Length: 242
Image (tube, one colour):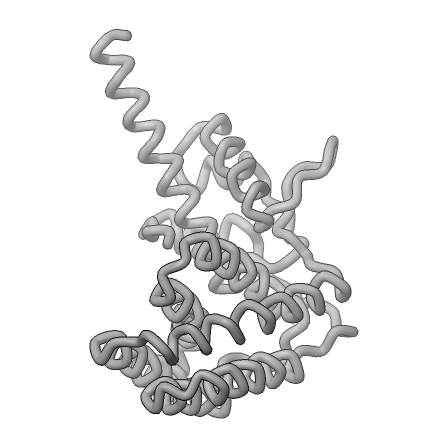
């Protein structure tokens, strides 16, 4: 392989990462709505990459259940069914109950401080009306709790469920991050400080059940702006994927 080919390969790889990060951010921020068609041409034009890069990214997102690819129809943002929505939260309850219990037994003061800061930042972003940022803080609280447990399989599995939950909330949710949800994170933190595993599990389950109560599983997604208009925000500032 020539030096020129190596440079081209590295550039293509970087572009793929940028497009992937931008699309993930747009989906998790709920700008790209469930069931929205993802035109390869529009994505390629928005990010300034070729369609081979776009196809690679869409296939990667398909493997992570963020995108559905239909033969002869193209790619769409995943749209969980009502049954899938319930199953996602059922499994989250099982796993996060265990996360809370384990974390209560092993959490360090530094980790408590980190989670407390996340809750404070979440509350600040909510009160300032930064809805997308507020939602990401809410999701990150759960992801960091799982990471702190130290089980990589659990962390990866729960990470995918949290991502799928964002699609559920985008499709069926009837409110953004709320003050009561932030208060519930505070309540979970209080049980972790006391190292009360049973109380931590109960607080986490209560929180997740409360989130599900704020979901309307018989609603329709709202109208959204065009794909090109949405992606122009992300192409100009590629985000780092988590």
